[in-house]
Image (cartoon, rainbow, N blue to C red):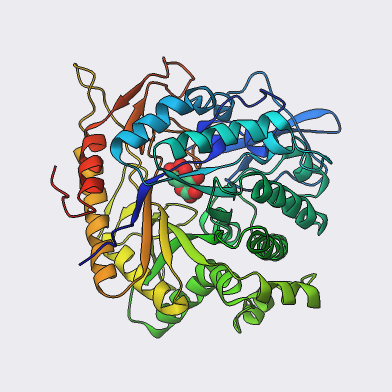
Length: 492
Ligand code: BG6
């Protein structure tokens, strides 16, 4: 039993975390290009000018500029996206290594600003289109299916300034034009598309991230941004199907399961309501094509009033996704009682769970949570599912003979693949699995290189030093066996 013959094994990345070449061949600036490096206890900052004066504020992935700010690069700061791991010039070497592992699929995102440098030009930038064409052709050479995220925490800086971080309906048309350009340009080369990476992070970060503003105003901003993104996503899905009926378009949700710390009914209620707010809200709109009943309660709690039209609600119906995809790293624990130990995580914070182990970055390891999440989600939506991110961020040390013995990563991934098998045997229609950061890349949360997820080590440090050489880790050879045995052989 377990995985189907054509199960899509592979790995995942995002443009701003791997490509570098941030101002090459006509690319414009993205918000990530004015985002500095951080550390576990030190936020990443957005740098910008207000009335000509350089300022900065703590930020989180996907968050936009403050109103009235004009993004700026400060020559005294370090911006990890500017070089990243220079995939832009190493893509052939990297895709060959993915092929050596036997990848069936490679998830990558397109930098909007390579295609439309400001986001709103009449015509796309030909050099940008050519770059991704070459990447997709390279994948095809090895029989690797590209899985393309259209927007992965990477809005054009100009649009973020002009449209105040998706607070303007005008963003929808800009996004749809960009998506249409991709669907037409890469017809026949790409089959799988995802509209917005971790779309629900906008709302999750309001309860789980210390680097963003909180309060009713922030909820108003977040729910309005999400509404416009839902419309943009649904329009893109509809358009994709019109352009090529073979296109499979998915949403992408930050998969987070909340546990109740106690059996106190208040805790149980709070836990369910948090799942609705943080996870189900976005999935329900994108898969079921309408706002859920509990949406009114969520908006009411924060005095939110949205710009919604009848046409928006109609397009939700017409642009339902074909595929539910999600990232999965951890679970969180919720209580209404007073507790001392709060732990962080991927856009989350919660009570420490005494039954789980935590990574060096405080992220809980919970493979049973993955089984649980898969079964809950499949039961809720009954459409194909794909896990498009999962992995362990860890510090890797090079041994004296230039090897990386990353048993901890193999252990983490093995446990999660076992959980996937159980869920599949229990009836979940899981079609693929792409581990996060299959090649070491910049951390979205902290901007570090030191937080590594890859099967392939990249020689680069947190200050931008290193040869950028690629070295296969022990997990590289292990994943190759996993893929060739279609998930049966998980032995080290
Ligand atoms: C997800 C993002 O939230 O988690 C990725 O989609 C990100 O972009 C990944 O890199 C891991 O998070 P981090 O902060 O460890 O890079």
